[in-house]
Length: 128
Image 1 (cartoon, rainbow, N blue to C red):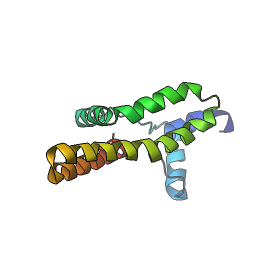
Image 2: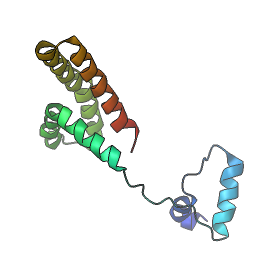
Image 3: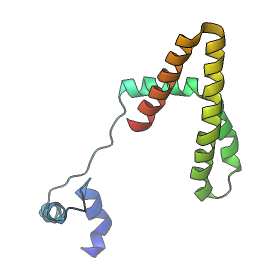
Image 4: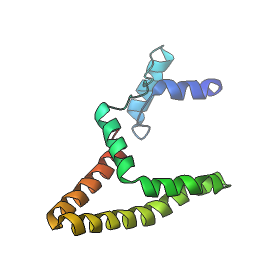
């Protein structure tokens, strides 16, 4: 079994290893020839539209990250850089957009835009 460890793990699919009864049952079934491999999930059209809207709505912070990314020499700092940009550039950019919408269109559209931006970001980040 150790010789085929990666193959067995792949065939087990999305098993909960914290539940030993379920994991052991799945291992027995894999050894008997069953496979639980999950096929790659294709993103829905709604998610693709949401991602496009999010990209358009957040183009400047995304471009800042795209400019900085090639300069990162060590792979382990990519996530740190994403976090830093996400914690600074995105909120600043959204605040500037909300202030601009408020200035030109009033408070209600600015609040609606803020809610839409937040919900869009959550939708794109938490679904696929």
